[in-house]
Length: 245
Image 1 (cartoon, helix red, strand yellow):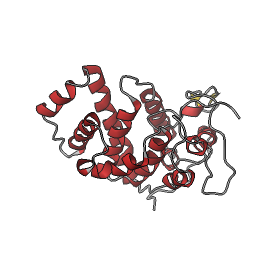
Image 2: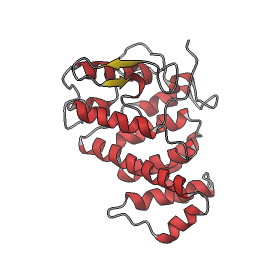
Image 3: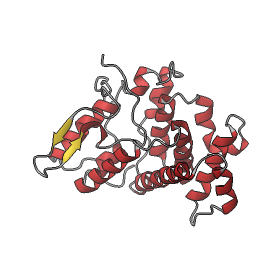
Image 4: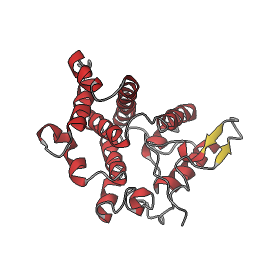
């Protein structure tokens, strides 16, 4: 159970963010509700996620492996649940998603995927235990810019997972929703895993945004800040573009 109430004050910024998030994900994301007790913090998290979504040096699936490995190592139930949904939507096979906690004993991962997960684990240790030999092996496959992005992605997952764990956020049922629709049918995953979700509160399914960066921008009348509607809060990778229904 969450250690703080997930019913922050209904400021204009919170109402706009709440509407946009539910429109994109079909549910009100618990981390955003927790952040919104302090709107400047919520906006800072949103801007960070928006910036990270535009990092393009790494293949998306490599980013996903690093993200999920760090979340599993830290043990954040909310991040693992939401990450499962995101990986499914990116077309990652179910057997690979479920094998992340046991990747050392699994044969489903490529050598590069295993190397990325091997890097994420010592980065997550306290203190970090990354050594020169491991970085040299990574540099044999990726250049300096890609290594910097990989390292930053893992650090960003630390921010998410440690905040969510500290305030007691648990799973929100995203993994269960993907299980209901079966394996991904195309490169972007099934429609409901992309955004047509059935929220737990019984509300009707909602459409995903028209494009991955969102076209709606709102002006916060109280604070004068411009809010990027679809990206006020977002996981590290944007939802793939879809066609409006």
